[in-house]
Length: 66
Image (cartoon, rainbow, N blue to C red; front, side):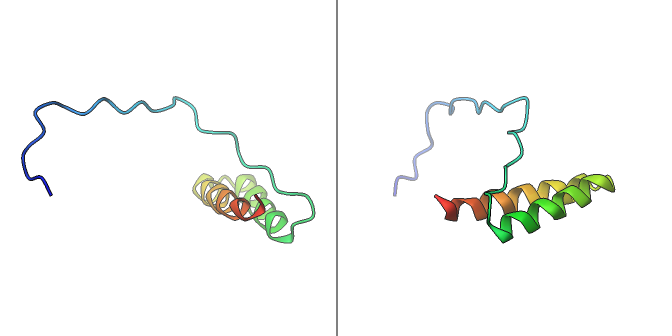
């Protein structure tokens, strides 16, 4: 392991100005349907933190569909 300091700075990190579109549930998957319903209820009551949580869970779950 090299403990010498890097003589140059790392390139800047570029972040998108907009979040990615919300994930779409897979047709026929009950887990996707449940997460989408939870997300819709959270959005309806203005709980954007829960909406974001549901989006993350839905994206992680959908990785299993690939």
